[in-house]
Length: 470
Ligand code: GLY
Ligand code: MN
Ligand code: MN
Image (tube, rainbow, N blue to C red):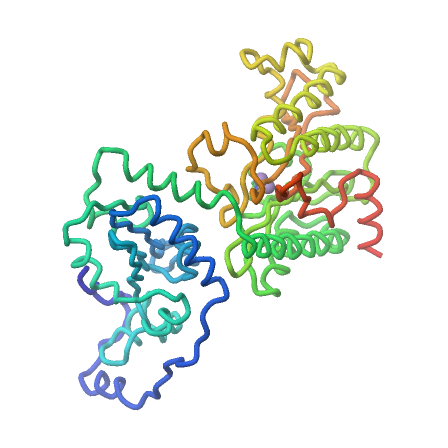
């Protein structure tokens, strides 16, 4: 990999030789010689050993990914690939983890700009005076507990012959360096990585607990802000939640879904530009992502006025019962799909009772038929961790068609969605959406609701809103 040209803007002023030489002089040594190892290092080492054991004799390449352009010369905030961070504890852009066939790991990194050339003050993407100081190679080696080399040495390393597996579609430069083979081996490697991430270690569970606790505080902030938000847009409340994430030094794991009124019937409503009106419901689906990149994914439905109408309450409680029944299916060894089926049985019966099904609930639940899905739309949960939809590439027999295991973390989120233009349902149902979404840890003998500090029943939601607003 040759050194890329400096990334400069067209309106940057030329630099005289005198200025260039002057800029390179007079800088203190800022090497952080006492940077401690990241506390996750014993875990990342164990994870790398597990991965190597599955692919001994292969060179393994796991990139972090690079910056993505947002507009013109500005990039999205960088967020590394989850598997890269899971294996290294590093979060810097352009990094590439390489296992030699004997399992020895090296991190190829783009270190801080030294002061020997123009990069540090002239490169808008990598220049230290533009975007901040990156770690030196030595600092990263100390912090991550992995030997480091400069990213410019990666090309030479990968040219040496070895059976190589690459986590693809993360860094196009790495994809180009190792031509794909058509054996499907890279896809199997990606699947194995996601499979390894399914069971969370103790450190990960602690991170997820912190993400959920921070999310709970964010939900409370939104409830507190509801009176001022009335008459404004959903973005006000999105900002309130994001403020909680930011004041605690965190981010969100996905764009918050702040869906008032009929927007709640759109599964991933993230435009968040609709009005916040008394009498409507607010579906808030949001998750704080910790600095270690673990995210919560929680949904609550809140009556903006503080009180559900009788119809809103009935539909909310139907979803809550579906959620209760789904939770009761969770234990190690239970099929992953069981909780969804159980929730659908409750919702289909509820839809039959509402008189909207064109058949009986039992007929609807026949997989060949499935017409209740017009109003339930999607699955009832997914794995959760570094990614909000975690481990999606894991083999089906270990995830969707597999069984729950102690250490799995997942969401349970059956919902009901009534589109505003649905002519097959009574007018009073149109334009409402309901989902309660819990974050769950499977334990050795059952499960623990990580999101249990947020209320579940309609009565508890109202009491909580009253308490928080007081
Ligand atoms: N927030 C997306 C989901 O609930 O899956
Ligand atoms: Mn979810
Ligand atoms: Mn969600």
